[in-house]
Image (cartoon, rainbow, N blue to C red; front, side, top):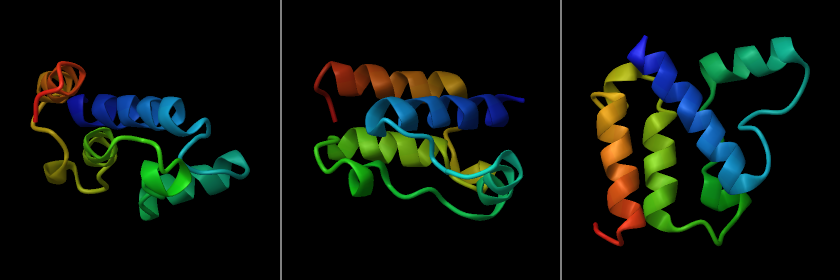
Length: 87
């Protein structure tokens, strides 16, 4: 459940950063793309997205769950560090 929650948060973050959802098209096509394709990196859509925030978002959206954060708390920690200007 935590992995799907993290992916959902990654989708929300992606939309906040880029102004669009990770995938476009009819619902069935979007569902297929979510399962099979990585979304374009946020910086490819909006070059002004900070690199660290792009990396956080892409990690939350990783297709393979073991490539995501180990927990939603770890994702939150990275977002806090970003907001604090820490690496």
